[in-house]
Amino acid sequence: MTGSATATVSSERTSTLEAVRARGTVRAVVSQGIRGLSLRDADGVWRGLDTDVARAVAAAVTGDAEAVSWLPTDPAERLTRLVSGEADVATCNLSWTLGREATEPVLFAGVTCYDGEGFLVRTADGISSPEQLAGRRVAVQAGTTTVGNLDAWFGPRGLRVEPVAYATPAETLAAYADGTCAAYVLDRMALAGIRASLPDPAEHTLLETTISREPMALAVTDADPAWFRVCRWVLHFLLVAEHVAASAPPGEADRAAREAAAQAGKHGPALGLDTDWANRVLDAVGTYGDLYDRNLGPASGLGVPRGLNALWTDGGLHYAFPLG
Image: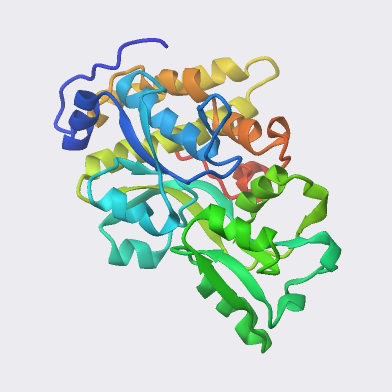
């Protein structure tokens, strides 16, 4: 770690920021366990893209990327724990929707991963398209947008499935695995991790069809705009760092990312941070591209293509906002 986490006192310092520093940790709502997004490994360490986003916030704010109190939570309770004050951030494959921002006192600081809901089926069943699931039971997680997405996709086709909601990911998987349900319906990236964790992944097929838009995002409460601003720019800096590194001449990627960190650092005091916050983010987790490759890409064993999660310069949806 470089530099100090002690910020210059400014009008932008927030009650949440002060509470985090006094406590010494960022309290982060994460999933109960989804490979590639947030899953505790054999050594008890939380791994995944969502958890690395939480580490980036902790590195910027406290100076220590591991200063995170992990709060694994069922889908139905994710926003409840955030709004109740139990957590400072929610980074848990949570889709950014109008309904959530309109009815809950939360704000989404930015998209962590673009995804969409899909279907995991048993290969032996010979199912190659969602239409073949018509009239059958499918397992879904309570507290997600899945039931509405199923209605929106099957209804216009004159078809229906019978969604059966389970309280926890473990119960949902069990209902699919024991044959109670013909498919497991969830975000495709989560399903890729679930498939890889099954005893014989080849016995299960992730259908190519995507039935919804799921911009998974970092959420905070709307009670503290300055904390929202800190979290938003930590997340966007990860994208900026990847953009400048990818655009740099051969051998100059790290230098370009560090120059971007220095530029971002100039605005640290106005955010309630110090001037070295962005360098600590790079030291802790790297760029957004590093996060993706490590947790979902080739290095993860999942090999989920970047697709919509590529930078806009490569045909994706992630756009690096200016730092000036």
